[in-house]
Image (cartoon, rainbow, N blue to C red; front, top):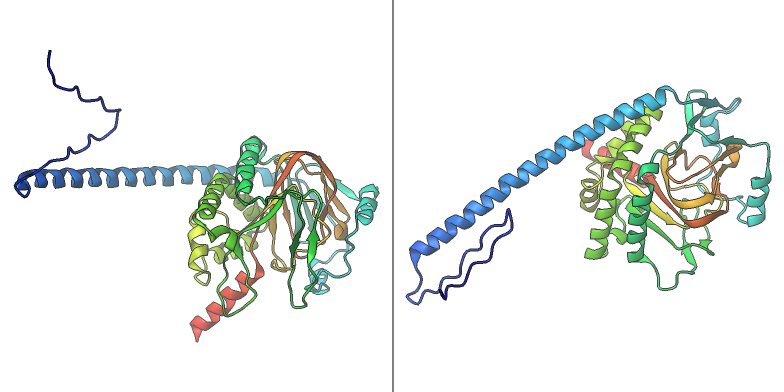
Length: 374
């Protein structure tokens, strides 16, 4: 019987390790040269493989983008349009202040609106317009096929940031030219999280990724993974905005490609195709009356709904609209311009991803471009 030990079989595609050579005479030059040549060959092979993977991924992305664009073009060809008479969007904007004043915050007032019968209820694909200006867009079931998978992904993501006490009170400041008292969010909130570029409100500093994104390696990994998981949804949102408001789509695209944002923002932009730089992840939140006064005045936010819930309609009192919301739906909203709130909902979980770009990003870009011309 041979005393030779049988070499273990390698798995398919594995590279046989280079054996360790003991050289008692200060090393075998030829063996070292062979080892270096083998190592260089492996590295070259890996580089070629990686380039091939990148090319394949790029090709797949082009195919997906083409498919998404074609699908959305067809959808908007047949989408119904509701016109709001005697409403001037530009006049409405000029009448607004940069604060959330005179907005009631009690549940009784929300309940009163929930009982009103004079509201237009949207329960199908619809674009709401006033003249040539689109104001709201509801797309039903756009993400229904990905609802279960993405709901699980969002829960996994949230668990990284979840406080020890799940029934907690969070205080978040809504800022503007006139400082406001804090908005308190209490009750059944599980967590509220901003991800993406947030405006710093200081023209001497470049808008940067929020601390929740870059505070630790664990946070960076979790945020990048979530951006990857939302890639197809982000492409759908881009294609829809391009159909809904081509001018705004170009404006948001310009901000995404602006050189006047921080390197951290640029880094996360490479991980997500969305033209919006910010993401807000709302988990089991009962949103109160508010306008998003840090958004662009005539801009858009995109709200994507996941989970397993019922009720929780979206109300827009200024337009006397009630949007019936279900998991998989997407809403495009002029978030600065119109007061909005969510009705009470029930269910296992309600997860919302809000795409937005802070107006501070637009201001930083404008200031940066002006400085470049001096």
